[in-house]
Image (cartoon, rainbow, N blue to C red; front, side):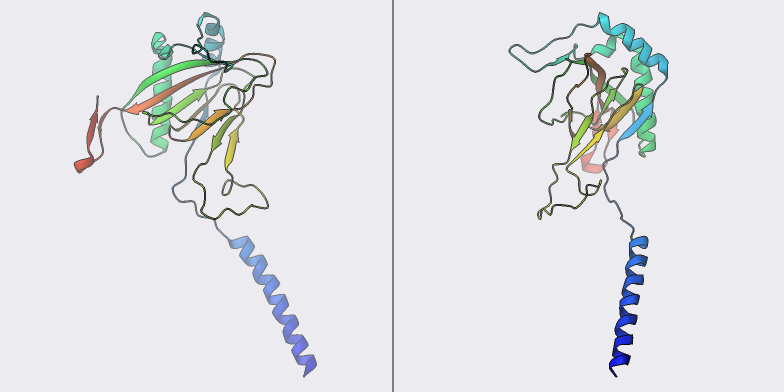
Length: 222
């Protein structure tokens, strides 16, 4: 009887091990309502243009602001209609990949300058009065773009390893020629500029134009 019981226990143990392996291999994580970020590498000519043009751009800081983060005029790209059209085309293509066929306008645009070995954004921020935001990198030295998730869970359990499913922060290490587009409500910041050169990038905000919504939620953006 003891021998039979021992064999049964051993069989149950082997069965549990096999089930565990099968389950680990077959577990599928379904992602509902993801935050989608678009990324595309643009032609080298775009980077070449901005690298040459950056010396002609005037940068400003708010009075009394000791943040080492400088900005150009708030509608800089209006002076470069061909570039504006190019980026609107790229944004339109990204939106189509996300399932939108919507007319858009570029509401604001600016170039940034972050001093060497400086941390420009210690706190995350987001862009209000905007649908999507875009940033283009045209230098070899690019600080990380860090996104912060403020949708905290009611029960906070420390994970044994960080994944996209449990992380509070996720970073992108941009490459030269890379364009990134993200929903404007996403909180983000620029990481420290650890290089010995001033870091530049081009940023802008996008809004829909024309009719959006349906029924009593319909609105016409001019």
